Image 1 (cartoon, rainbow, N blue to C red):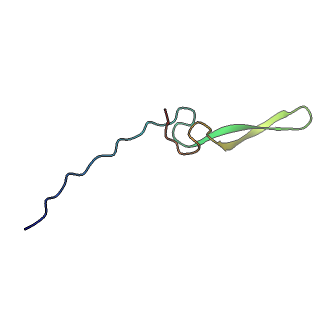
Image 2: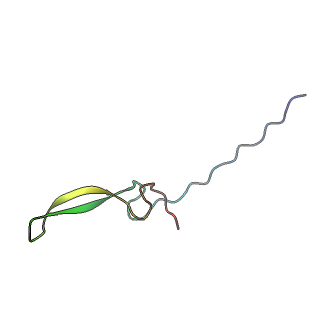
Image 3: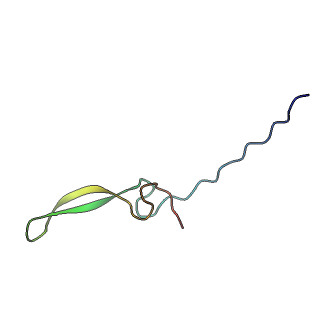
Length: 57
């Protein structure tokens, strides 16, 4: 006797993180010198989702 096939459950998609739009990275300002002049930006980890790109709540 053959076994029954169970239906495949669909995993619900989690919403994307707002600050990083699901990428896990956000731009951070780079400052140099005594007057802390802004010279550019670099990628930094998103503190809302800790780099996963999925919204927590």
